[in-house]
Length: 184
Image (cartoon, rainbow, N blue to C red; front, side, top):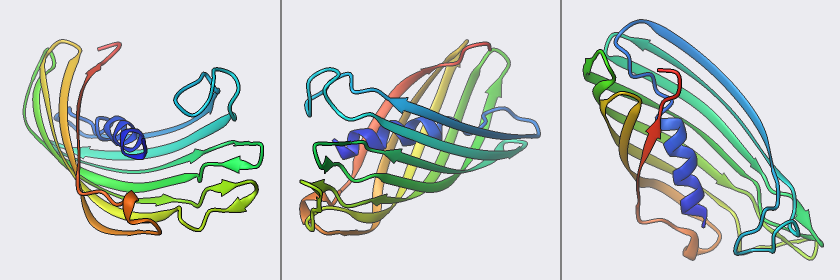
């Protein structure tokens, strides 16, 4: 599940890179409460309440842009058990050689992230077999066929990993998706 959540977060942040060919600077901050609506870990409304905090800043000049970001995932506790919090720090660069009015574009991006997974707690005690850190590179391609639609594909490749459990190590992650731009 760690990889799926990581890809979702990185996908959102990777697409935050501006894809317009003019000068621009953007700063964005966000905070959210995560309600226990239910998943494979617990029944609906019977799990812990969590939170998320993120900030990013980006700069753009011509077809080039850069981004820096931080993301913190706060996991709530339930009955003395708590999944370890996550901290992602990263950045990236993008080159958008083709962009036309109407939203048609192509962008090649390369991001990096330092991901920290803090130790879990079981019955209030630290789980010595959990937690760790990794540094990953994230090559990404973005295509805008026109209008408000963006399509993206990314791969995350571990550059360095240090986990307490070898089962947590990644060989690679692959993802893709669709983004709809409101207000364009």
